[in-house]
Each structure stands twice: as structure tokens, then as C-alpha cells.
Amino acid sequence: MSQVNVKVSPQWLRNAERFRRADTLRGLVTMHNDTKEASSKVYCASFESPIGVIYLASTEKGLCKIALPKDGKSSFLGWIKENFAPDTIVDDRKKNSNAIRQLNEYLIGKRTRFDLDIDLIGTNFQLRVWTELTKTSYGKITTYKQIAKRLHTKGFRAVGSTVSKNPVPIVIPCHRVVGSNSKLVGYAGGMKLKEYLLRLEGIILI
Image (cartoon, rainbow, N blue to C red; front, side, top):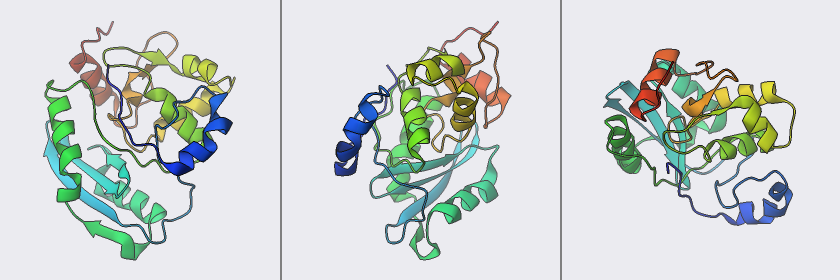
């Protein structure tokens, strides 16, 4: 199964009861609100992957951002500046070396499971949706409506919008979400990349 192993944060435990009804995975992510991080450092890096240049960033708590080749450097830096104070941004490949290695292994078909800490930044609803995405295992697909149903909400369009804003694509597998008719729809990294990732996982596309 392609799941994400993460550490349990005290803040998550305090909020666990509130999320239990939504069937989210307790201990999955370190939670943040939408305000800029005032003091914690964010370590940024880029690397040449089998699909092109990927930009990524991590805090001391875990991986917080992946920008796929279609996103580009400007989009990546824009997200970083929106969420972190300027004096906390550091260029540091070493802090991201584990994530870089695991992403490269996945992209050449040598890894089906990520073992990374993740530090997600988003609203409560976004965290619920992104958490739910991790339940779709390697080589499997799901739909926006199925995710909405599991979250006990009829707002599948809101789910779709949130999926498209997933800050750590591939690791949180939003590429495994398809339309109700199993057609490839909506992928921020581009449809060609989505098809590539699904074929990489052995999913036959019709």
C-alpha cells in the first residue's frame, strides 16, 4: 500500500475528537492554520527528476510543499512567500534529501510507499480532504464523489477544488482521483503527468 507514515503531533491529538466523525486518520499530519509561520524555518530545494525539475520545501516538522514541473519556480516561491516570513526561508538541499531520494525512487518504479513526515498547511476542510486522499493505495483510483461521501459531505465540487490545491502531490496521491466515469480530469500537474503516474502504478487507462 502507498501510504504516508507521519509522526503524531500534540496539536493533532488535541483536535482528534473533532475530526473523528469525519473518518480522518488520526496522527496523519501536523496541522497549521493559514497564517504565515513567524519563526520556524522552511528549507527549500530543487532537483532534476525523471519528469523534470521538481521544487520542494520542508519545515522541521516535515515536507510541506512539492511543486511539479508544470508549476515552475515562480509558483513555488509564490506559495512559500504566502505561507512563511521572508527571514525564515532557507536554501537547503540536505534537509530535503530523503524526500528527493524517495520521489526519484517512486518515479522510476522502485518505490510504492512513502515514509516521510508531512507538515500540511491549510484549513480544517482542506486537511480532511488531503488526509482522505492518503487512503487510496498504490495502483488504485477513487473519485471526487467517493471522497465526498466518505467525508459525509455532498460538496464534491468543493472536494475537487481542494484536491487541486494539494500542496504535496505524488506523496499525497491526488493523481489517483478520477471523474465519476473513470475519465482523467483535473490535475494541477497536467494531464500527461497524471496519465504517466497512473500507468507507472499499473493502472490501465481506457
